Length: 462
Image 1 (cartoon, rainbow, N blue to C red):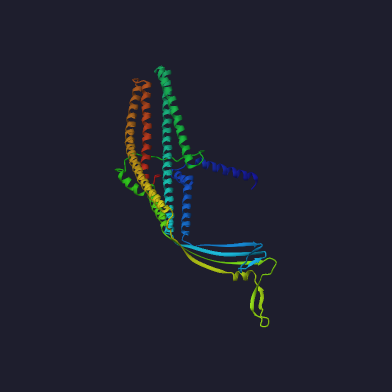
Image 2 (cartoon, helix red, strand yellow; image 1 turned 30 degrees about the horizontal axis):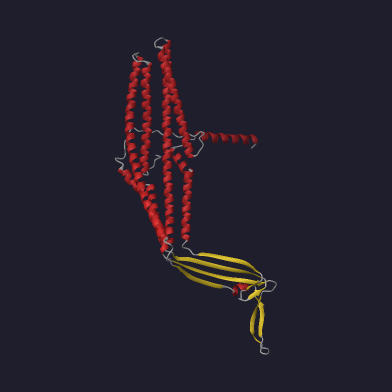
C-alpha cells in the first residue's frame, strides 16, 4: 500500500468516526448508565467501599498473633561486661538476633466489636453509594425530560412563526389589494417579530438544557444530542390511591433510612468498645534470642576445662574454635509468658468514654427520627405534587381544546371581516399560552410520577 492509499484510508476512518459521533443520539438509559459509571462522586463512593473492606481486614488482624524479628551490630570500646559476665578491657564487635511473638487472648471483647463495626462500615458505604446513585439517576431523568419539554416548546414556536409569517403574507396581499387596512399589516408584523423572539428563546432553552445534561454526564457538549421519546398521556391516571402505601415501603426500604439505622447499630458497638476499658486484658508472649561477640585482633576461641594435672595440680584447659555459628548455638535462649493487666483507676476516663458513646447514640436516634420525618414529608409532598400535576394536566388539556375552538371561531370571524387582525392575534396568543401550559403540565406530571416510582425503588428510566 502506497502513501497515497494510506492517507486516503486514514481520512476515511476519521470522517467515519466523526460522522458516527455527530449521529450519536443518547437514550435516557444510556445517559443514566453513563452518569453512574463516570461520575466522580460515584467513583469516590466506590473507593470508600474499598477502604471499608480494608478496615475489615485490619479488624480481623487483631485476632492474629504478631511476630517480629530484630538484628543488631554492636561495637564496644574500652571497659565493659562481656557475654560471660566478666569485665573486658578490649575492643569488641558483636551481633544479636531475636524473634518474638505475641497475641491478645482477652481484652473485654474489644476486638470482636471492632470487627463487627468494620463489617458494618461496608454496609454503610454501600448504602451511601446507593443514595448517591439514586439522586444522580433522578437528576439525569429530570434534566432529560427538561430537554424533551424544551424541544416540544421549540417545535411549537417554529409552528407559530410559520403561521404568523403566512398570516402576514396573506394580510399584505389583502392590504395591497385595498381589502384590509394597513393597521392590520402592522399588527401582523408585530406578531411575526414576537413569535421570532419566542423562537429564539425556545432554541436557547434547548441549547442550555442540552449543555446541562452534557455537563451532568461529564462529556463534551459538541454535537451532543438525545434520542427523543414519544410521551403519550391519553390515559393519565394516578396509579396510587394514597401516599400511605408509598410511605410504608419507603420507611422500611429506602437506603437513607437503612443507613440511619446502621449508624444507630454502629453506636451500640461504640458503647461496647468503650465498656471494654472496664475489663482486664490478658495477653501471651514468647520469644527467642542469641548473640555473637568477637574480640578485636583475636581469634574466636574459647577455653574448655579438661581437668587437673596430677603432677602440678594445675588446671588443664584447651582452646577450641568458637566461631559465629557456635556462639549463636550456645547463646540461644527461649522465653514465653502471660501478662494480665487489670484496670483499677484511670481518672474516670472509662466512665466518660461510655457516657460520650451513649450520648452519641441518643443523637443518632434523633437523626433516625428526623430522617423518617424528612422522608415522610418528601413522600407526602411528592404525592400531593403528582396529584396536582395530574389535575393541572387535565385542566390544561381542556384549556387547549377550548382555545383551539376559540381560535377557529375567531379565524372565521376574521375571514368574514367581522373581526380585526389585532383581535385574532390576541386569541392566537391565548392559544399559544395554553399550548405552552399544556406542555409544561405534561412533562411536570411525568416527572412527578417518576419521583413516586423513585421512592418505591422502581425503575425510573423506563
